[in-house]
Amino acid sequence: MNKKRIIILAILFVAIAGFVLAPVSAVNKTYKTGKLYFKVEKKNKITSFDKKINGKNRISGFYIYPKNTQTQMNPNTLFVEIYKKGSNSPDYKITKTIIKFKKTVKGKTYYSTKTFKGNGVIYEPKNNYKPYYALVYYKKGKGTPLFS
Image (cartoon, rainbow, N blue to C red):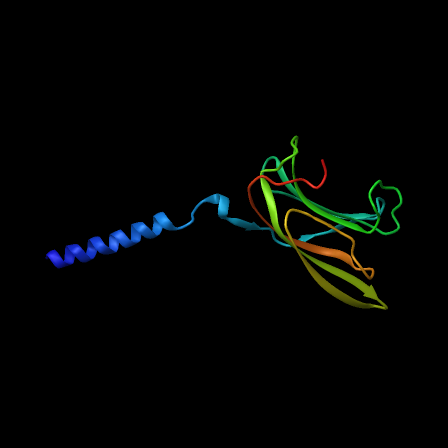
């Protein structure tokens, strides 16, 4: 009977130690969005997406077409960032962004993928590729906005 108690106590000790040492903090957890497709706004000559994380934080991305001269930002530029309503520093930060690009030449469609590490994306696509969708990985922590 003593051996059985010792074995049970040893198993319980190992299980409790495993729970205590496991990183269960929400700070370390990385979240992933689904595919965020860029929606075309022909009249504004941009394409964009917007996804709500919680009540105040949002993931936003937009691409300004090359022939768009009606904007203060550079044409042919892609932006992806997390921003917080009414504040300069969001509660989340981007760790990785994967953008799938698309272009059509003479009826044939070509795709390209680019991965960005770090907080946010500012990028000028090459060879007439336009963003098709984005996958954004983010985690809790103070992020730095691209625009103030």
